Image (tube, rainbow over all chains, first blue to last red; front, side):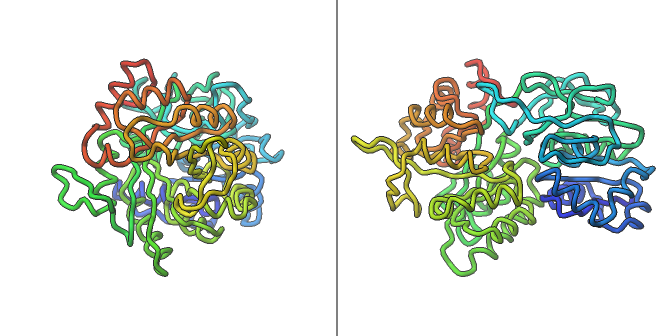
Length: 195
Length: 252
């Protein structure tokens, strides 16, 4: 199976590569539209800041390529947020593959920002989460979130519910770090590879 | 519900784990990758690697270690110890570190925190602060592995670090470190109230109850310890079961 991991200088992509290698895959780290189009699966990792990530995607022409991809696609963390229309993080205009607007967590006593650590998933509704339940934890680290909507396929709470995962057609995305979520995260990656 | 995190800390030198680690059934306790994997399997939520290498090869050996750890480990880890430049941080993050902690370099030039947060995002920049209690000044910040008193107030420095873009504060009480008498609840609580980012408490853990206290009384977001885990005095799973019985949310 050809797996393309999109390389747009968006931070720690190495962990995603290693996680796929642990599953016996040989992913290709690439920004080449032809390699990406040809792949059986596409993974869109991301860390860092939305506006500069979008600048990098535009500079490489990937903002035009990604929305046209037909194969199973998995955005991770910032790679999920970038699929929305707009982010409060430096007023970024994003890919618009999904209709959500990304907001910053409000300042509340007892709720530190970033939302950092292990949290459970609720209302799972996707084959991406086959075999998982309410007692399974995944690792989050983010200061911005996508609200719950029709596109939400899993929720988490901090303290109000937000989108832990979203989907539109072949575009799947998770806010947490599958590659850093222990055996639970590994299961989710395996589920994605079987889509 | 977001859980409180338990974080074993591993000291490494020249790519090897130091401080006599005694682990039954672990063939090479000096191998950081083997030790890290073992902690991950036992239920550690994150790991911290503190590099105390003082040679010219420091950067290369640390990058190699990070790569080896990231290849194996499926939980997040932070790397710290003598990291001072944007290039250092970039090399560690690009090779698989999830977070990088800076300490003396941030005190020497606080703008470094802003630069790192802008470049890489706050989520991966940890400011490690070493504090010691003095009469009558109160808690003050030390640098250079705890040898030099900056005269800076601990709460003020942590607040400044968070405002400049640190995504997490790793607060070590040097007054408590090694005592096994418990975490410094007063300064941990004061810092936790003063900043809006997560606070990791370090220094003084000697019992399971100490973790309950640091979460319940001082509102720490995570508790870090080294020797009690390395010497098998407290197992991570039994610690988490204890915390759950005390009503503290943990990942089990």
